Length: 431
Image (tube, rainbow, N blue to C red; front, side, top):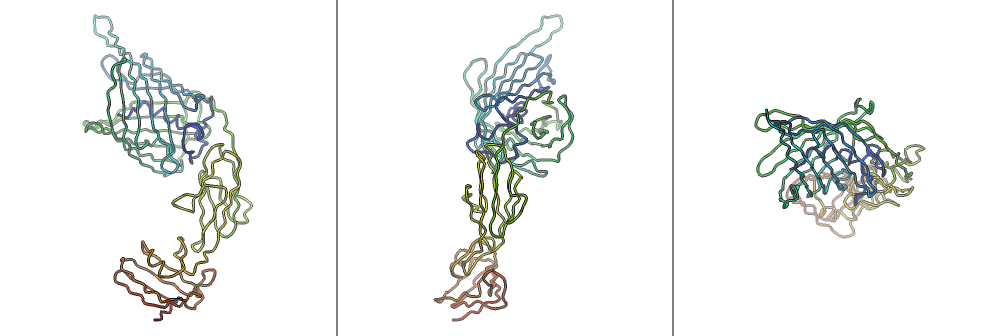
């Protein structure tokens, strides 16, 4: 099952630096995750536990530190002598979110039972849980922008041993959804912060039994997690009960170093970045240079006109969408984005160019508009067959910059429509 008390640590653990424990660097706003080795956070903590035969919220403290190997270590110490120590490993997921791949938790519990006219009964146990997640489980969204919603379903495989006994295997499935809400003022013992609120819902299913949990968290830039409230819904009674809380009491955060990213644009188009900082057009005096956390991955997005493509320099082009390119900020970098007008005589706006109408007709995968230059003239007869059910508009007579001239393009051959619909203008069809 998912260990809810561990969610509090994850909020801090998500402060991991992008260069420490991730195979792929992150794209979220690193100002919410100050993660230099030696950083530390302390919290007042409450956790649902057993006191005198009944569950109750037990008070204590939590200490979180960034270890020399880049992992985050969390130790929860409760007033009933319960202690929980945890480590977690993360990776980039969902195009820049934070996900957990594995966790190790040691839970030492002393439960005291009071029986009238008898000495107290103390039962001690130490539970060790090693957990892996496939695919990795969502813990922090890729953006802190208001309205961001991200969901991921994972299977948790666990090996649990008690007091050194044999490990017991178990599996469970969690569907995690995180919604980002507007920033608000939050007061905790460490001070008052303007913090982004996130609400996480967790549906956990294990051996046919489903539980629903909600975690509210507040994150402040340059600080990290400042407050957390977790609760669980009883699926039978319909009652919701608080299972844990955290409030920041103190922190020691070393400001992360930054590297400068500069984007140079040629041609007509715009380049923006995630995290925010770059919003650049050709000739602009602002928006083309920004500082990013050292080691962060900055994802650049090009917005070319419908008749252009973009060529990148000094960044890694996305294999699926060529308008995306990423730069790892290990050093200062200058990235180039060159927008150029598609020179092919035929094109589908915002997609690509083709040399012939026959070629574009064979590549159709959806309803679209096809633009044709006024210089287009079929060298050989083309026999077009449209039988895929798409609605296609053919616009001929376009000049070198893809402006309508009022003239026409010449197509030699036949056009047969067996399914779908074709609307054509500025196109002369000759046999």
